[in-house]
Image (cartoon, rainbow, N blue to C red; front, side):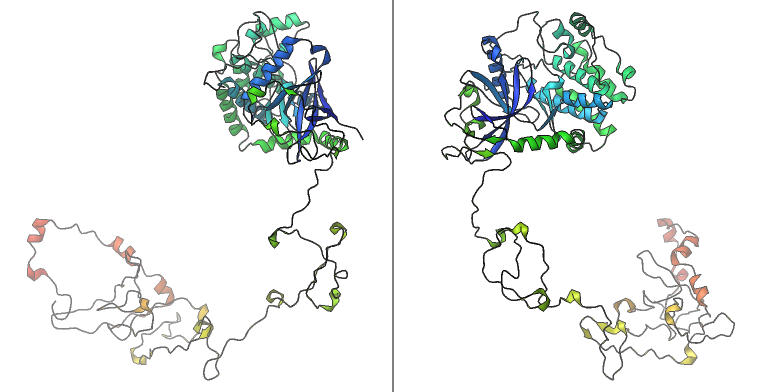
Length: 606
């Protein structure tokens, strides 16, 4: 198995990147509780150790990054010296940079989808805005300019996160090494025109560089190309690029406009802040891909680098940490800027924590912690019980006895899953069947509608006996004047009956809705009328009855109604609509009405 190499507080594992100034390793360290943490360690190449200006530039980078606390900026833990080696420890992003994403796209001949490009650019714009607006402890603006926004400095995790890193050549007011006028730093093809001419830069230069990265992600080719570096500098200075719609016509027009504005030669015509650019990209995402979130980009990353993820996990498990020295932690050169409570103060190379004496760890296993017996039984893990080992009867006997307090099997994972027979049948195991209704007095089974919940209630119907000579005839539709009693009442149409006993109320049926109001037919009683404005039934017009003072009179016999005729009767609302409208009398009209014009409404003349 490969052995990890200790450098300061960290154990270097595999090398994940290599450049002209430093090489980057994936490394592991431990906290005071013995928990492992993965970090990225950038070790300065040996031939640059004697370059004091370069070392001071790295110190400035670490100090700038130590002030930046943003979710889209890779955090710096320390810049330290251990022996003759200098290194920078920073947050490890489990994923790939945009450069690797571009290479994978060129291999497959498929540009990165526009929605993913917009997501990466939006998150980077947030990071740039945080750096551009950063202030020191006294509230003074630091005026940080990254100056190297390029695919290799944009890290994309397998969880969809995007982080900006490497402020190595960033310019800020606290930088001790000042760049001379006319000196160009950075990757030429991602520079802004003013940066290519060696002029003074501001935050809008980083936004131009971000636009060039977007251009390449959408087209898989750089916006500025030339046979020589000198000609390339002139092309960047003049912002001469192939129009985006000529190279990738399928890119949405709205995204094209965002890229073109970011790459405008005039700084005043570009986006004036990273926040403004991020807002435009968010609006595009909401219109082009509604509901787009970080999880969408995470799925894309895991799909593109599926094989790499598996290989990196196997490689990480293969390394063994051995012979850690707690005294060789190195000297932190930016400890003052980080403060006494910085996370790096919790890091130690010792497996199991400082002072434990543990010196070996195989990265495939985390530190072993002895389990603590919980006081709450609900905190106990689920265990598989072996009936034979615990002295339980066979499953076929169906007898369940108390489980004795015996130790669990040596390896619970070797036990097979078993089903224990229940002690008794559950009600849910019973078959569904019919149950006889309770019988009332006399042995006759009452109707289902007469049953109350939990008990049988005997209902005595009221006496509704009506003399046959007073019953209204019911036409059966055949002209016979009578209809036989139907055999199935549920199949009959609903019919409305009038009170055959005169004007008095119907007998009390025990229902509040059938109670008769004073002086007339109950409101809920069935008549040939319709609903009034309150939703109740209104009395229907009957045959005219001549009433005079002191003469109650007898009502005319109700007409013979068939069920079909009953359903065709108009509602009261319809009759009201057909009646001629009578305007309300004014004061003059009311004064002309005499007592003789008034008609009494009942037999007593009231």
